Length: 299
Length: 302
Image (cartoon, rainbow over all chains, first blue to last red; front, side, top):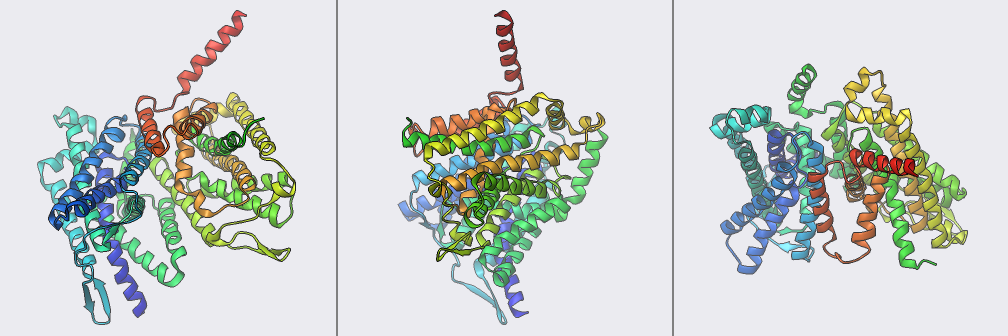
């Protein structure tokens, strides 16, 4: 039982990183109703921008964090223009494939500029540990969890309490009607994409600072973990993204402990496959999916 | 005769064409699969086990591998019937990764002549020695690949000209309308995904026997995405489309080495731009119609 509880704490630690990644994913899906598989690589490119600043100029943490966020936003904007803005609205799947091939492009571009396997990244709170009786949790994970919680509140406030959020929801519901009502849909989409990329850049900065290193494989990891976490929680659901991230982290930590490292990823994909086939809306998005299906069948 | 490098390139093109055709079949019924490499992998292992461990003849091993891959296709198709679009695509991705990670654990070895033979988890599966034992040259094996590819292509092209082909395209265009026309949409999808598994399986069996060694990490997502991208570049109007995609990528980008180091950047950009200007590829339905009309007119003029 003690093992299980410690596993759950470890799971929450990694799960908070997954939750942050899933939040950006779900924001993009919520607005565009399309998947951006290049989300992880765009974050990876941002983190490499931060690492370049660190190794070349030994910059401070704040500058590195800003460079990471700016890098992720710039690459994210490139993806948005090429894979989403330029492709017709009814071709959701074409956008997804396009974002997948752009992933390869970003990954190769970064590997050409940074040919080594790993690069150093400045750590924050890397060794600090918070103890609860016999159990312990890394302080950097607690910080990530707190930031994920703040991000959820911030996003909910942004989407449901501001004029910009109203425009985002209008574009998400019906882009054509939003355009007729005077919303600049292209700009709103681009800004929402930039928000998601900035959030991703922040997540990438925190994860890289917790690990004190970065590799080009981070893009693949971030996309897959964020995608699984979002799908578990429900595509487009903001609380679902956090729930899915934490659930994935806890399941993985226990699978690692009881079944070994080869089985851990297998269990994660089996969970994803089971959720997709039995409850495609995820844990929190089923009602929204069903409502959308009902609306489609009426049309 | 052809030199070794050319034979190698052509063999690779032939084998990857099976994945491209397999992804194309799923595209025809209106779904996207990121997971056709799973069937390639399943058949590579199954046929390798049959020929190296059970002593089956080559052709029987290839057919067995393809049949097992077809069964795996059924296994994917039935639970995913309810989901479409993005959800189906991610489910195929999850399925393929499940297969790859299961192969990382899968161990089944027997002793042969004092040596252990068979799949050994992440170490891979060595000594699928059929082409050494039967003394088949790379050139001869290329002929086997091309013959099987030509036969597969001929069957697909023939089906596309029949009523069945029209039904499958109808399912891909609009499943609701197809159902209203009395088409059994579920059956069409299950059968197509299983057939796609079988086609990828032929390629996987050939791959295992040509390379004599396979390991799970070869069958990663990038293999499947390439297979999918070939259909999208080459065109979804005809089964020649995916082959055109293969020829453009491996034949031009990889072999000329003009873009070595930048190949993924060029390839990624090419696909992204094509998806914008020609979302159904170079040989899309309109292009195929124009080419067919042109050929018929020329024929009538003779």
